[in-house]
Amino acid sequence: MSTPKTITIAPVRKQVRVKAGQAHAFEVFTARLGQWWPRRGTIGKAPLKNVVLELRLGGRWYEDSEDGSQADVGRVRLWDPPNRFVISWEINHHWKPDTTVASEVEVRFVADGLDATIVELEHRDFESLGAEGGASMRRDVDGGWPAILDAFRQAAEG
Picture (cartoon, rainbow, N blue to C red):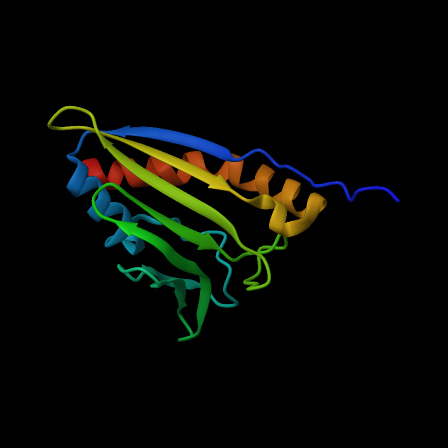
């Protein structure tokens, strides 16, 4: 009898330096998420109206659509302002909400002097989507996070 093979998919790691203090950077990333999050590529069925992150442990991360519907993206798993937070990413490799799978996103805010912050993002645990689905999601988010972090940087510095 052979041992089942465990798949391992490398996490996606990105970082951006923001010309803003740590607390401000954290606040823009979390409380003002809907102001800078890209409007293309939504997971809901209707055009995106807003993106919301409930600022507490267990809080929802969801999209509000123009037709009044909501689509859950995930939940807050760790809440440590202004240092870091961790959220689940309950989206399958077809880019649909799916509570049976969950990768995880951790965002850390490291002060870089008085007026700057290094924002480190790690998206991990793609294995929950299976070998093929996890590899597909990893490719997609590896290409997508840089533009998202740049939109955040612009909002935090603006």
